[in-house]
Amino acid sequence: MSPDDLSQLDKERLWHPFTPMGDWCAPDHDPVVIAGGEGAWLRDTRGNRYLDGNSSIWTNIHGHRHPAIDAAIREQLDRIAHCSGLGLTNEPAIRLADALVGKFPPGSLTRVFYSDDGSTAIECACKMALQYWQLTGQPERRVFAAFDRAYHGDTAGAASLGGIGTFHGRFRRTGYETIHLADPDALDRLPDEVRNTLAAVAIEPLIQGAAGMRLWPAGLLRRLREWCDAHGILLICDEVLTGFGRTGTLFACEQEAVVPDFLALAKGLTGGYLPLAATLTTERVFEAFLGPVGERKTFYYGHSYYGNPLGCAAALASLGVFDSDQTLLHLRSNRVVLESALNRHFGGHRHVGEIRQLGLIAGIDVVSDRETGETFPWEALTGARICAAARRHGLMTRPILDTLVFMPPLCVSAAEIEAGVAALAAGLADVLG
Image: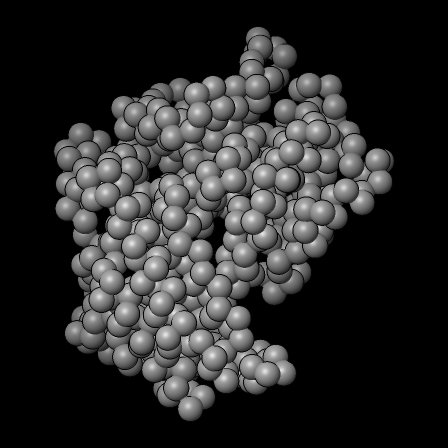
């Protein structure tokens, strides 16, 4: 089909996520149809190339068409693409579970439960936590604590943990009973009668992604772990965004020597190739679910594509690439390159407020006036217009309202980082002068 035919058919048939579809379907809107990718680059049906500046919505780790991951998926295709995880198992799922457990201190996180995406990884952690307390004689522990501006997914339960009104406000009455707090220090001010009902506290470690790449203060995660331990409350770390090198270490919680009771993984788990999620937990939690069938302790929750062999094969290959390509070592030097480029292009700019960076994750706040901190009306879609303009300079990314996001695949070169940040700055100049 021609590029024009594809664009028109898209408007007639697809419903895109997080997208005002009236604007999308407007006659003057020309959707970008991606046709291919290689390394850190994307190519559309009209032959334009773009640096993948948000890692295909925060999923791609080692670049597109990485030969090791491609080969692993093709090899698995010669065996089987999928088999059930209900009453059956498969080698890639077994090996991946062992590899993930091996990334944590011995005896800490020991069990892996597979699902499909970040939302379901969080749903799994929440349901496990609730059932754990029921099975251990404390059913009153039924409430979750989460944080303002948190994002933990869009399924009903995961959304109830979220703290962003745009995404979660319409569905606030569904899902789990949750209290939202400004920060972990607010936990200390909870009355005993509330604290004693808490099943778990959920947090995005080190950085809140959908909040605009907002950084938590150093040491906060460690203090939260200690608070949960002191009060016998479970800790859920949502590393759907931060897992697999984004922050500079394989997992963000490593940076404060924290091991949670539940760890939710998705997005980069397969290197950004296939939908797969994993919820890791402890032997203490797992053992509460053991017993004769008549005791009804079984965890009755699961997905048809649990432990999909293709996804697990891709994930195993992605973990191998971290070693073969020395990904984390490469990332350390590129973090400095990114910091320098951000300061050079955006530091002191009259329309740039705060610049935040963690590893290869960057958020740049666009404001009407830097001196006063005045912002643009959200309806003006200033961030979206800047990112659309940056496409003309060879960068593909997506903002969070008026926070510009730059988060390329970890395979990106220093020169590509420089070019990507320059393209984003050029987009800012095109829109705001």
